Length: 215
Image 1 (tube, rainbow, N blue to C red):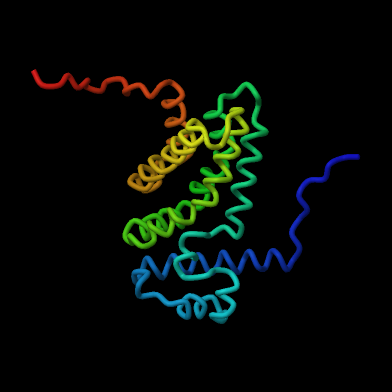
Image 2: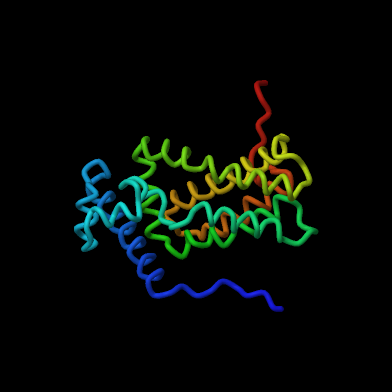
């Protein structure tokens, strides 16, 4: 018996994903133009040609329309965890995680303008930053558990948690730099360079003056 791959989405499912993407895109644009505090759910729904009730079928709040463009972030996290566990056994946990995460990182380059605008909105709004970190608690538990399996350790051990923070730090630092550069350098390029640097022991880049302390 052959294993079947993912089944193609039906028309109804595709329409729902299109509506969700449209609402998120409008929310981003209006928040960038007016400031999120000056945008209402009715504003977003009205521009999308749907009711506020329909909006709430997709997002719990206008903030979630900015922060959670994916329809199933938990499912996406499980898919990332599965890809990391399926990575070649010869890869160390850092490289296995980077291989699994790279398609996600590539989406930032594919959807460059939306992500650059989204990051600008989040950076200007402390409330969104708090909500973003809070939304990552469930995904953190999933990924720490997967990293524990990959390393043969318990999820309560320090190493899986430390590795999760390292990988998260790579994504955060490279995304911040990508945003500062206006997306002129591919995020995947920055991400790959950061992973290479950490895997090499995080050496100081060549040509950098070495701090010698007080004389």
